[in-house]
Length: 150
Image (cartoon, rainbow, N blue to C red; front, side, top):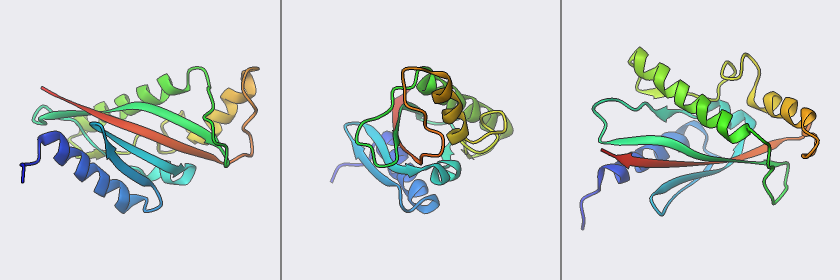
C-alpha cells in the first residue's frame, strides 16, 4: 500500500474535522480536491479549517464556492460573491496564523461585518437586477478546497 502524501493526509484530516463539526455535510476527495456539499447556512457558520503555517507541507485554500437557493439544481451566479468569500477565507486563515491558532472558522457571524453570510447574500441579490432576490429563502453551499505543496 502506498504511503499517504501530505495532501492526502491534509484532505483526510480536514474531511474528518468537517464531519465532526457538521455531520450532515457531504464530503468527498476527488481529483486532488476536497469537495463539501449540502452545507446549510447554519453548518457554514460551524465549519473549521486547518490554519496554514510556515511548517505545513501543503497550503490549503478555498478554490470555489457555489450557492443554491432552497432545492434549486443550478447555482446562483452572484457577481462578487465568490471573490468575497475567497477573501474572507484567506483573511480568516491569516488572522488565525497570526494568533497561533490551529483552525479557523471563516464564515462565522463576524466575517461579514457582523451579519451572517445568508444576510450578506440577501443584500447582494436585492441590489443586483440579474439574480433572483434570495431574502427569506434557505441557501445551500458547496465549497471546494484545494492544496498546493511547496
